[in-house]
Image (cartoon, rainbow, N blue to C red; front, side, top):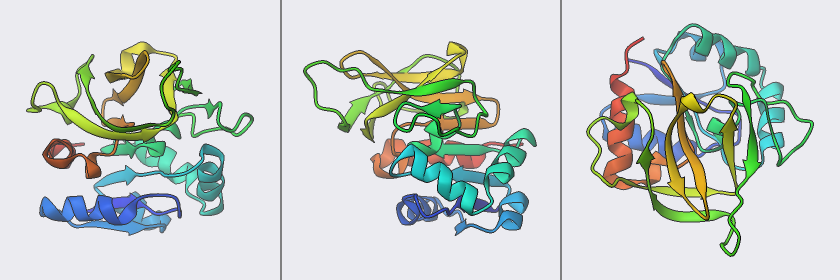
Length: 203
């Protein structure tokens, strides 16, 4: 099995790769379009600002590659900003189009009286069917660092939420396209279980 971690200069590549290594899976960070197309599964991490990430993806020639592999039905996992990039745009950088794979926008967390970004551990509330969450404990705690969250046009794609001054989108999914706002690679045994479930996804 070949897992490609998309390297466009804006992701937590080492931690994600190390987590897969702990699961006995070889996951290689790459910016090579052919290697991404040939991979069995693809992971899109992301750290930083929405606009910078999209500009880097464009500069690396990877926007259409990502759209292609998702359209082909390959198991695909977006992590943190890698989840937000799947949508049409973000309030963080108005006017910068996202990948547009999922309809909807990314909006700033509205949490009056609370610190934004949300930073730390929070529990998941599972709201839909997702292969990522099979066998998780209840409640399942995961690690978040973010100021923005996805607001899908179709609420049916939301597979988990968390509470932070209100309801915040924690995960979305549609078939083999799955994405999480939190960091599974920083979420201990729960995060490893989520990555293991992704490893078991079949096209």
